[in-house]
Image 1 (cartoon, rainbow, N blue to C red):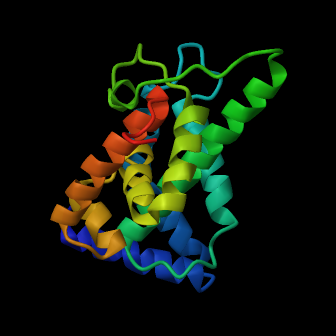
Image 2 (tube, rainbow, N blue to C red):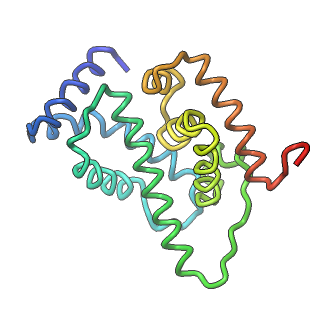
Amino acid sequence: MDEVLGHEITQLLQAWRRGDERALEKLTPQVYRELHLAAKHCMARERQGHTLQTTALISELYLRLSDLKLIDWQNRAHFFALCARQMRRILTDQARARQSHKRGGGVKPVLFDEALMVAPETSTDLLAVDDALNRLAKVDERKSRVVEMRFFGGLSVEETAEVLKVSPETVMRDWRLAKAWLLRELSGEKPNGA
């Protein structure tokens, strides 16, 4: 991402917050490609035949963002971090709705490593990942946010570091530790001594 475009996105976000609707019109095409890639990344992990398509995920995201325009946008990375959180919510809301329509449909454990793969045939149990992330947030909020931004939003290490105001090395360390923690949680293993 070129720095000038990042600065322009930040200015448009701030203008939108101040009520300039034209800023949103200018912002949309500039962020659409990145949002589409992040949504495609998320959808690649969904089961085949999933009813929500990439463009529908982005449309739902735009609807939710329009309700959030009063956010004090810090910069482009902050915007994409919030988009990652909203995409996570959209996908988990749909997964919960789908599960509530099933009778007796138990939750199957999923390996987090498999969930990180971007192969189209890979299917994840989003609810299990979401529940595990919620438990991680209670233990370490920052590690949970690192996973959310990288896993759901497709943010780079550098972008994640910028949002969290930590070094890229800290993000990488948090990513490794969070991944190990989530792998254990999703596999149902008990920690040593438990």
